[in-house]
Image (cartoon, rainbow, N blue to C red; front, side, top):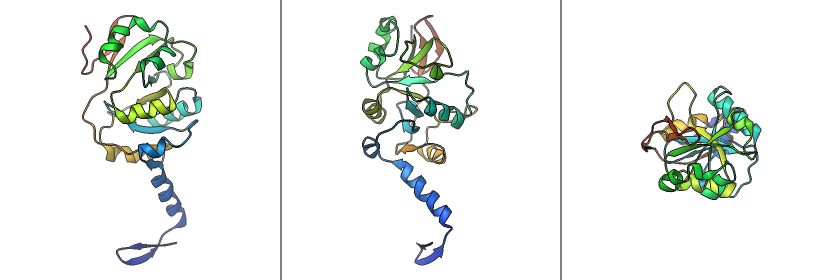
Length: 210
């Protein structure tokens, strides 16, 4: 196949051309994503903290893909992002255990760890009885969560590396995921994680509890 480069037509391998088109089609605007239906697809999108990679919470196939992409050990659970408190209540036991923190800091960079109910599969929580949930303060993330529902999400990075903040670094994952949503460079850190069951901080971020 011939393509034009700097006024000249050059021959490129058809296989490379197909890969190029596939990668381009994976990198889309938010508006384009909201028009499609998803099942087991893995999506990369910005949040109010770092870039995340996620899938629907009922997709064990999608969750397994995420573990493979990150080279993450299965003993480390994923968190769930939600669009609103109503979605959170559908996933946890006794929302009011952390209700005062949720109402004060959500949407925002605070993950609350609750006892999970049967709507959350063990494949998300690594067999644990608890699950971390959060409502992000980001229009892109919230639009996705409102359209598709709660998603199992973790930071986009290899498990041995720091979370990704720069959009140009996100594109390097284009062959491993189904969709990358065009975004901006971010300048935050991962969320504070607070265990409402045992009342202790598991990870300190910008939000202070206590």
